[in-house]
Image (cartoon, rainbow, N blue to C red; front, side, top):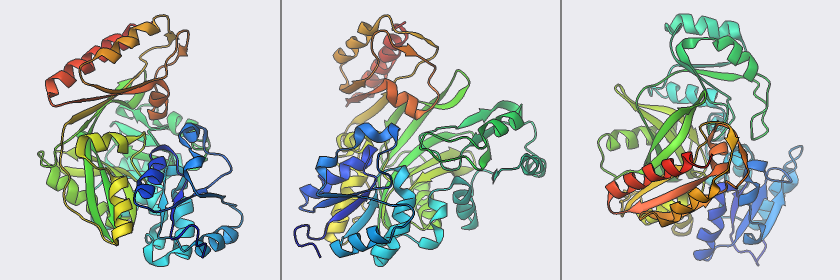
Length: 416
């Protein structure tokens, strides 16, 4: 054992919100070691990587993980946690060999990353989900549409290993689904994975929520629930508009929380953080998908303002106390994230208009990346939204937040 490091926390791909693990563990006196699944972070996460936060950093050799596993075993770590989506598979590959008693179910690893297998596992556990098929065959899609009575209905297509709404496409009335399917098949998503199959899913109607959890020894605590407000934009679907933190007892909350815990069990989550997207339909909750990693986009820092804690803080404390406190969260103040979006292609000629956002009464943080002279294209996914920026609003008066949201959209529209 390396005495200098004690029993460190191992963070695999500590990018995006996974970067917050280092601070949370170090505040508890726990050293932190990083593991990278590739020599460089994916481009979409590169700006969030802070190597200086880690006592040591290892880079995995995907052709032979044995040296890495031996190095990590020698450190006698207390946990191995996933920082962001690109590290899910590596965590599942090394954790059972380094910490077999503190790992997720290795037999269900594929269900924690592949959206087709994810759906099968949840359905196999007896939970209701949206009807879907995952295949590389248009003939199979055709048969499935006929068997399920979905011909001529709205559909959703998405890559099985993407993230942040990358590649998520709505097919209105099922028109030209075949052309869309063929155009997506074989391409690479923004994490660099080849889309060898495509998930085709019925379009669900309802309100979408994001449930952030922390799991320890098979027990699951809910750290927060947020409501997603999404919009269609220039032919792209599910573009993030705003995200609101919800009180713990809103209508439907109990049903959503129980469903979320059952989804975690279905895909074999026992340790770590997860982010579960659930549509509350007229028939009850239905899983959209689950990410077995922290809620991205810097979410934990805003969750701390809204609730006083976050899933990062809960799981770090759990691996120090060797137990999880599953008490419910509380909402201390109203919190809303406004995602900047571009409705049409154009050149930014009035960037100064966005400076007025700094004077809004509810402003907590504005991270705006738009510059004068930029040539912008219509926002197509969450990655594109975050490339423009976002505004975090916090206020005890929800009406003020609503007014400030409207003001942001007016200012955003005036930059052209």
